[in-house]
Structure formats: C-alpha cells, structure tokens
Image (cartoon, rainbow over all chains, first blue to last red; front, side):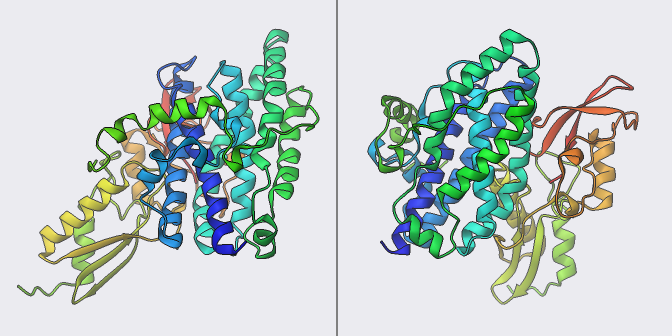
Length: 251
Length: 162
C-alpha cells in the first residue's frame, strides 16, 4: 500500500468517528439531565462535527476527495470507517458519559501524537484542536469523579457503564490498512502505541473514581473495514434526510 | 477605478468588523487577523478562527470582505491562515477590558500551554472577586465557559483560556 492510500484511510476513519459521535452527542440537545449538561453535550457535538469537517476538507484538498458535505452524508453504511462504539444509540446518561470519557481521552492522545506528524496539514490541525480537547476531557473527568463519589448506587451504575463500554472502546484502536507505512513515515505512532498511552491516561482517573478497569480481552473490531451495527444505517438515514431533499442546495 | 490605499486604511476598516457573538470586540482586538497585504489584485487578508468549529467563521469572513470593499473601494480576498493557530493570549488588553465591561470574564494569560488549574480560574466580572468556581466548561458559545461567583452569587460566563 502507498502512502497516498494509507493517509486517506487514516483521515477517513478519524473523521467518521467524530462525525458519528458528534451526531450521537447532539441527540442530548434538549434532553440533558441539567441545563449545563444539555449545553455541554451540544457544544461538544458541534466541536466533533467541526473536527470531522476539517478532516474531510484535508481529504478534498490533498487527496482529490469530494465535497465534505457530500462525503459526510451521501455514502452507504459500508463505506464509513467509524468504530462500533460511536454508532450505538445514546442509551442511558451514564452510558453516554462513559463513552464521552473513553472516546475523548482517545481523541486527545491521537491529536497529541498528530502534533508531531510528518504530514503537515494534520500537524497544523492538531495544533488547533488539542487545546480545545482539554475542555472535553476536563468535562468528562469532572463528571466521572463526581458521579462515582456520589454514593454506592451511583458508583455501581458508572461501573456498569464502564464494563459495558470497555471492549467497544477498544475498537477505536483497531489497526488499519497501511499502518506499518504510516508509522515508518512518521505520520503517527500507530494504534498500539496510542492505546497504551490512552490506558495510562484513563487509569489515572478511573483509579481516583474508585472504579475497576476491566481487562481489554475482546476489543470490538470491524468498523474500520466497513462492517457496522444495524444502528449506523438508521442514523445515516436520519442524518442525511434534509441533505438528500436537495443535495445541490446552497446553505 | 483605481484607488490607492494604505495598510493603515485597511486596519482602520477592520476595526469596524465586530464579532457577531460578542459585538463589543472587533476582529483585530480578538487577534483574528494574521496578515494584510496590498497588491494590484486588491487587499489580501489572512484570518484565523478562535475555535476550529466556530459557526460564525463564514459570517465573519463575509463581513470582513464586505466592510473592506465598501470602505476602500477595492476587492478584498480573505483566506483562512492554516499556519497560525489562535490562542487566547492574542486578545489585546483593551479587548479584555471591553469583555469585562460587557459582563464576560477575560481569559487568564498563560505561558504557551493551558494547565487545568488555569481553566478553572476566573475573576467575577460583576464584583471582581477571585472566589469563583467552574460550573461547566461549556457555555452559550464554544468560546465560553460557565462559572459561579461565591461572593455575589452570580453565574457568569468566561471567554475560555486556550
């Protein structure tokens, strides 16, 4: 595989993760348990979708990709490279919160590594995004700590959410095609290295919160090769509904 | 029509382009302008968004183009500068003063990297107290966080340090 193929693969999977979790998080708009949480999830959703857009834009400018809006909304489920973790419905609040905690720490580690990338557009974008992500992890950590120390029932629900999420979160780090080349060319250090750093970062918070970190035994793979849960196509139908009414419209 | 203009005239025009979400601040005070050049084609202006997913960026870009073209009678070419990243140290001291008068706490100056302690720190714009706490890192716009003042009991927004 050439770098010209491996790079778009990498960009697409990260962008698709951000687009889909952005849409999922936006489903909390109007439903948050307290007003600040409603606003926080909406703001983070906006950030994620903005990050996805920036990555689709790099695909367009450097790899002859299509219009970002078109690319975001008009593909079939099998052409998306997002992991299963981001596709799942929002579920209970603790599930969404735990997903946000695990995903945003992974995203942070990823962009920290991209800040040293040999691929300049990615390195420039990382410089912009990593400061913003601090607010996402600050938000996640604060809620994990608060809910885990709020009483036994609360802590148990958070533990259950962690157990439910953990193997799925492993799917964020599914190695992609051309990985060895991307590492050799110093685009990024590869999924295994990112996963290790991620485990180190989350362990710190998990321990403070009094939670038990499960073993990563069976990470849920498949998303990176276009195999998805039934939830993705349903979400895509909904996401693209307005766009498909008039794909040529100028907004 | 050929109009001769100066860099100073461009900067004067830019002072009239206000942030749609914080209308007391112009794009220069926000530190959003990274370069201005004039050549035969017209005025070339480079700008940067404060937050990468800022929804107001296209509107601001349009406002810059329209204002410069109207005031200087020259074509304006406005592009987003990818080489420079915005950070809150780019806010001028005047801008911070205007923010406080507008009721929004100003970001604390930092040394290159924002630490977690710094994110949680804000002086109340209403009573000036330092005894405040971070209620939520997300407010009514991406660039704002919500804090509460222990002294006067008011909730207030802060322009986030970044």
